[in-house]
Amino acid sequence: MTKIKIKEELWDIVEEALKNEKASAYKMAVIEADKTLDNLMTLKGVPGTSTKDRALKIKEHFSDIRKLMEAFDIKEKILHSVKEKSATYASLERRVNTGYRTIKSNCEELQHFGQIKIEEQEHPKNGKPAHIVSITEKGLETLKRKK
Image 1 (tube, one colour):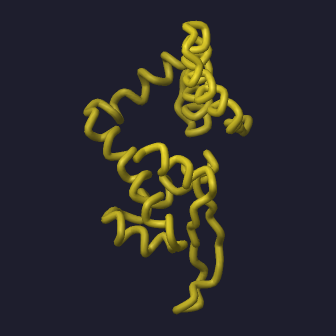
Image 2 (tube, rainbow, N blue to C red):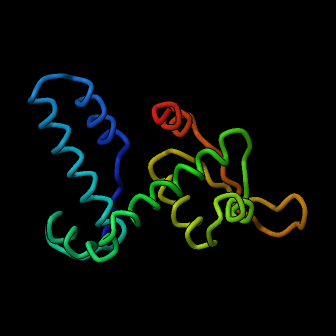
């Protein structure tokens, strides 16, 4: 499978189009959002030949809208947790009250969209390798928009 890169510029186009009050701009925003969603599903390995086909295949994962909202909440909690100070995956597990795999996958997704930065460093207390998560300017902007 060819590695697909979702470019931040695609989402920037969506956000810019939404600021414009013309109907054609909204249409552009929907088209670009659809491209971004399709690229993300392809990147995550969802099989299918079209956005609709892939969306139908992941439907079972989001059969309950609450699960989708929980996924958004976890990402927002991660951003808030690293807003003032960087954190390890382990400390995020405790702060967000979820497991390692959930933290890891959500952090990787947030990093992919430029919201956070993940660095592997030596843990300051035990000397073992640790993933250190810090927020980016784009992540700070996201939190400001959510207020």
